Length: 180
Image 1 (tube, rainbow, N blue to C red):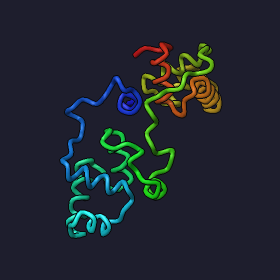
Image 2 (image 1 turned 135 degrees about the vertical axis):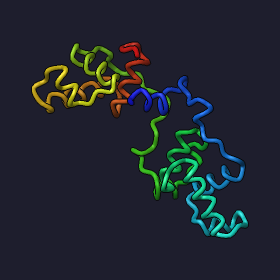
Image 3 (image 1 turned 180 degrees about the vertical axis):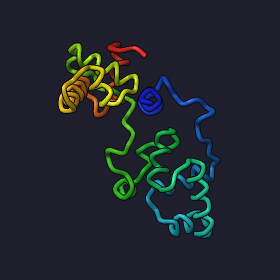
């Protein structure tokens, strides 16, 4: 599972296969950009010289195509699919629909300050890369309690300059600490 996440979001050399990419026609891309601008349905309808009902129907079709239910999810998925970039989204829309922690992390991974990992941290990272949960990692590494497990997890994230497990695994792979 973690492999799929980092493959999808963080590794440019592991781009999505063409069969998984969502293809849009010109009018759908235009509507997506208008939705990203933060405009309301009536404003978009007026600009595109369509009826509000027509725009609602087209928006619902976009939701269906992206398999989402809300504009926020639509925009995030469009960013993930590299159909639009974060720069295409207006500040008005960012404030309304997107929070900074929802935005997919950029492809660049910062170089860690200290790549020296203890044996437990290395094993922890290895188990994370195999999609083990922290509870299972705690059992495998024979840690006393979840507090110890969380301690190693956060030490690992700090050493690798990562915000979450996926970024930690990506950084570990990128710098040759672990292999998948």
